[in-house]
Image 1 (cartoon, rainbow, N blue to C red):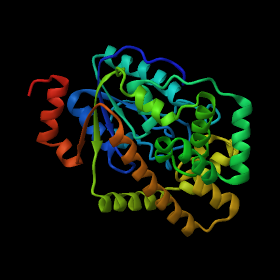
Image 2 (cartoon, rainbow, N blue to C red):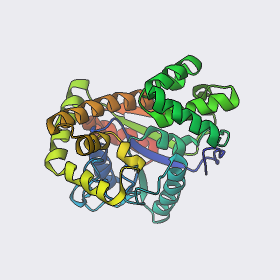
Image 3 (tube, one colour):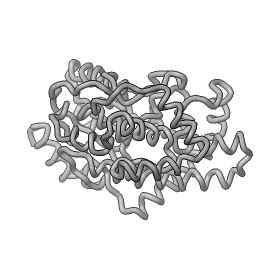
Image 4 (cartoon, one colour):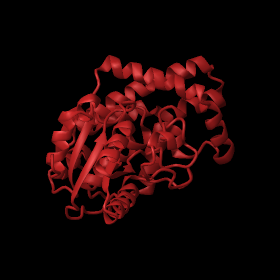
Length: 318
């Protein structure tokens, strides 16, 4: 499966636990797996890489409580996985879990990866290397926000879903428009109306904004206390600064601390701020995706309301 692949036919029911960063996705998924006889299939675009542990909040063995978690540490940072690669890996993991009589529970907040798994990807033209190189050169010369402003003029829908500093996704959207004359946002919206690959219930964990911000602050503090800076220092020593995962939220700020001597307290504040922004973007993306969606608080999900809703979806005896 690639960016240009067509979606296969529906592949069966699937439970998906998603939500913004720091919302408790892994905790909820582990608890449900223990109750329902399930195993986890990760949908996190950083946790797939070996060595990216603290900054990605990769679950520990203690946190997993014996529940198998697939698609953690599946490749080295130099081997970049895209959404299509992830969907192929996840399809195989889901089939393997089912073959052993267990319930696969997809857990993660990487929106495009979830879209690839649940609905497939939009058929798009192959990358034009010369066009891509030109756009990247313009981004370096003018800055990603300048290209984002250009994208907003031709594809306001895609621009609204892409951060102004996300050079990779901005360039891709501009590429598609240049090659097809059609906005990527409109192409994806049309594609979303097609048949899904799985009959999925997407559970979006919901928190009041002030409480989620507090959880983000607490997690950021804990990450630095656990040795986040040393983790990034080791990654830079082993792999250099080229792996794309080092541009992920949190990692890019620590790279600046180590390479550009940004003060540590400023770095920690920057990580918290970037994480809050990322959480807002996740919320917007996830709530706008089509399909069967249940937005619910963690307490209700793990209580009687969750038991009733999940039993109905999975056709389990109450």
